[in-house]
Image (cartoon, rainbow, N blue to C red; front, side, top):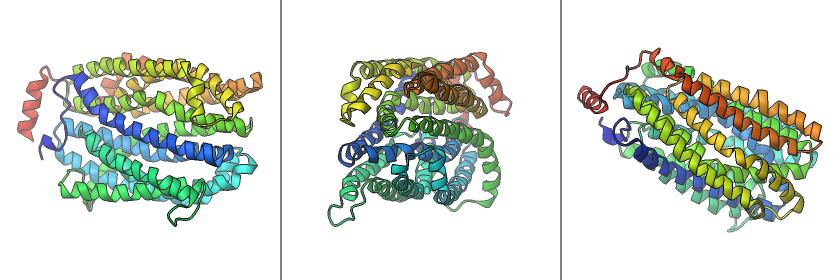
Length: 473
């Protein structure tokens, strides 16, 4: 296998790699957000505040469950990028085999558990009684798509680990286009299809993800990709799964802590009524865009760090941090400024409810100034995750969410007797996350954690090291 199967990020310009690798992911995320907004418009403008609240209540639960799978796909990205950077292609194949078995198995098990416990979960979140039945139906349909979502995430992580962010973009775009077309057809019952209301959005997502996954695997098989799905070798499964569990379990806990924190915060918001719940859903859509550069650059930085650490180029990782902070911070500041200047206009795209608009404007004016802190925190986490030190980013999430955001949201909203207290807690948690992330990055312990695993020591000349690796491969 040669480097044409992916992009070697251990040589060449760091800023150019960040831009060219991040751009397809950023475009894909924009497509996803655009669909999310279109979906929110269909639901919020045509089905009403109650339907928007149904989706809002369900999303944190879905994200929490996704967190378990996303943690494992993060482990896949880390192990693939390190193996690819070090030109250990046999290790790469073992990672693919183990990842395929583990992630699909997790998706199936979580789907079964989700179908059983959906009503109990929503009641525990203090879901308003008038939207509980619809929320149960919507969430159960969403759980059915878990294995397909996990499969797409895993395959995308493998390709990105090899420096290929373009191929996932094409199939993501196709999936989003199909979902966008199916949404109104299934919501309103057009072209002879059943009228499913808000549940139509969940069914549209399931169908499009299933079809995209099937076509993607067929494409990879046809092009003999090293990450194409195949019947896994039994001797590959055990060792690779152990590796994935070591890195992926902390990452899964981290992702789930983030999402579970959203569930808890949503529960606090729900206590202030349907209007507060709908507001939180609307501002969350806007926040997805505001934080998009931070999330995208964080994933890109993790891959760049993983490949360069695998190749032993520690000095290049410092450049990745500096350029990543500059790119991510600058873009986030610009988007935050727009969000703060035009909050009312942005919210009116999603809803015309005056009460929702008032609460939403307050949220954006309080939280948007802190988005840049989130961006820097994600850069730090990208480096740390690239080194495989996912326990550290898990600890950061634990502190940020469970020491700061959740308890402060509960306490401050009671003291202020207003859901606005939750908004201040979210802003504070962004600041704390950045402080913790920067502290660990500048301590240098992330390098020591990587070296303890017996990985290559830094090379003095990246180009020389690359030539040596190619010769060995």
